[in-house]
Length: 449
Ligand SMILES: CC(=O)SCCNC(=O)CCNC(=O)[C@H](O)C(C)(C)COP(=O)(O)OP(=O)(O)OC[C@H]1O[C@@H](n2cnc3c(N)ncnc32)[C@H](O)[C@@H]1OP(=O)(O)O
Image 1 (tube, rainbow, N blue to C red):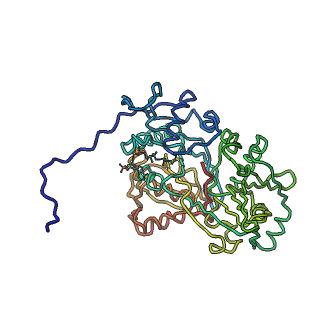
Image 2 (image 1 turned 180 degrees about the horizontal axis):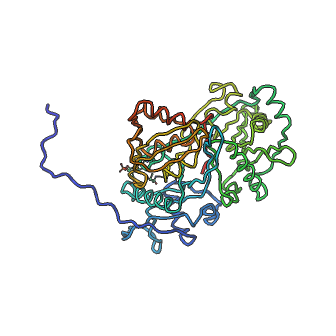
Image 3 (image 1 turned 30 degrees about the vertical axis):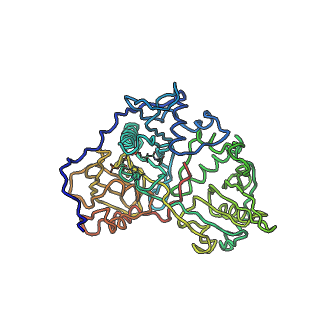
């Protein structure tokens, strides 16, 4: 039997033309169609949360939608419903802790992209590409040199020049897990006091933000919320929460000084009369490792619990090794912050370097063509960098996403060259760039945003 397809004379069918969508600024008056799109894209509704409450976290100075220029009739849609949005995106003016010169840290502004969604009827027709192009061009116009996001699916954002720059590590420990941090750190942790308050009050949210910003100054890779985000981020919605415990915050203090915080919730569990409640720590930050140890000791030791899951940790997190390493701590890891250099020269000048370096980078960036050229990156013995346009012969050719991936001091360029993403044009150049960009420690995971 011949399984070959018969020769066909049918001409190839062109894909349908991209829909004509235009980008518009969205404001509170668009609340109804924003929520309609959100529910369709994420198929999730928070009960008991009003539209106004749900949208309070958006910055309407930075929220945009895509709408069809000529909406088509939709059989079965209720009369009077506004034409649905084809897509939307929003961003916040956040900040990230990047490597400074020689192991120091530097806090940099970061455009944090969020709320990206395309209507299921309009997907795979270029709406996201249109939105991402506009988003990055606006960031460039506004002078936002570094952008970041957390990806819903890993295949989406590399094509737009974002590189996965940090890992999100989840650790699972048993109740009473021993944390072996050594005598000096243990006695420093003894000097730290901890106490619990409900997280969802305006008073608590203020102190959480203070502790969050302070911890970020000391933590490579930390991403911080704006004050406006912080004022609404941990609100407690009793109906949406249902029978779950309200979010709690454990503060670590030394006298008047708040030196750490851990946001957690417990859920009760009983089997044959034996308590085995589960603790989930959503976010934990500290200005120093003694404060971190004091917080960790508390969360592994709540009565009536059996396990504690800590989200948002880093791959060389002290907690991981205090607990005995990956096998004791049930380590699971995924990608966390994706970094995009909107302006290669400004971004590469803003961070610091671990070694002196002098290299010409041939950067490929079809989405942001102002980056696509040769740049000379130099840093002296002081680790302070400069990145300027040049026409000199290149040492390394690389997509802009490779620089984003290496930006927080992880994902070495030499490793990316070995993987085939980066092309070394002069022997040794990839290793030189690796060493200069590498940090002493791994970046922590970003907060969820
Ligand atoms: C930062 C954040 O907010 S992350 C949240 C992202 N949102 C979601 O995941 C919600 C559910 N998904 C969606 O809303 C949409 O499917 C989106 C936003 C992911 C994609 O929107 P679309 O308009 O379909 O994307 P668009 O048609 O512009 O595709 C652009 C390119 O990305 C690719 N692409 C789009 N989505 C995906 C995906 N999930 N995985 C892999 N590739 C993808 C397309 O194939 C296309 O590739 P090409 O450049 O080779 O042609």
